[in-house]
Image (cartoon, rainbow, N blue to C red):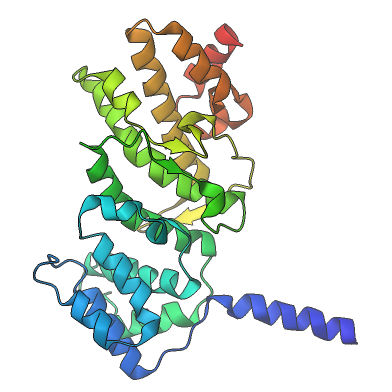
Length: 290
């Protein structure tokens, strides 16, 4: 009987983990904070709100400010590390407010309805985490357009993630954001590929492509009215980054660098090719270079 009660207790503990309690006053404060998320920092009262609102909102407001402040601010550990569960919930409200604005008036929810749903529901933590890093990665993308991040090291194991899935979610947004420049350069043929490649950040002290910890279970991810495989979307995009990197190296006759990229990255992991839209290209590359 005791064992049964423990199991039931654990079940309800897990079930309710996505739930938080908020007073009506706090819901109003949350709406006011989010209303400032699209306003220029110079015009937004976010910093004043941080001084006057309950402490539970302070971290969330700091994160919002960081996405609007000087781009390098987003590289501070306190914004890269795993947020609290409550902060992730607040960011999910931001997401749903945004999606709700795109709906026709006939199906729009009120802001109160959205908040009530999110704080009462049990939302997959992987979705919560994905949403947070999506929201802040735009600032990193903007920063990398000009900045040299080669001396910056994303130490994933020190950012408080619970498992390999969470680490991969972080990795995809950080590297795919920077790697978009490789895609543009490969497509247009313009720019200096060596310069761009050398500006890429490190992961756990090594070149980004050494990170190969993607053996976690795939899962369904829900975007705006669309459900898809998380790995097909994000691991597939990462394969595009690697293939564009490889292509630029070969075009510049950097064959040794190209072989190092292939050998040390998931380009040499055929078990993951199924997540890429370039599966045929990857198979041919593997057969030629294995």
